[in-house]
Image (cartoon, rainbow, N blue to C red; front, side, top):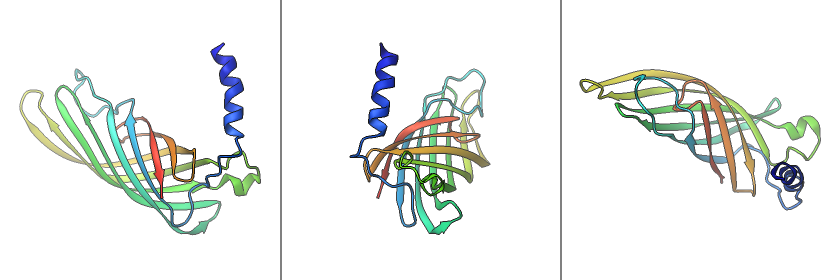
Length: 175
């Protein structure tokens, strides 16, 4: 019954004429607030991690470049475990694909698909036996998507390689 409901409701939701948000464009600002569901292993094998918390911001720079737009911004990620605490502060760059331009279809009107890179510093405090503080460089690649319910609000998910979490879900605000 749940599968049938899902199959019937999702197409109606996706085809709703009231949803008219546009994908990421030049001049847009996007703020993401997310929870990392699968932590990236950096520290102690015997630790249990809390879900990672992630905040990112980006601004749409430049007019359209190729089939999309470039976003540049910042990232902060944090997580805690039994024996260590980790934080990442980084700059991030994204390329938002404009699938509407490619397909000419309205099906992707509310969907913003992007890929990007992140470069910055990871700070770690290890309390396993003695207290040690470490700082490392971090480089991450990621892919993600925003789905906008209105011109200003949506949800997002990202899959990354070495951020705070391999998989992040959250809410997004566009202004």
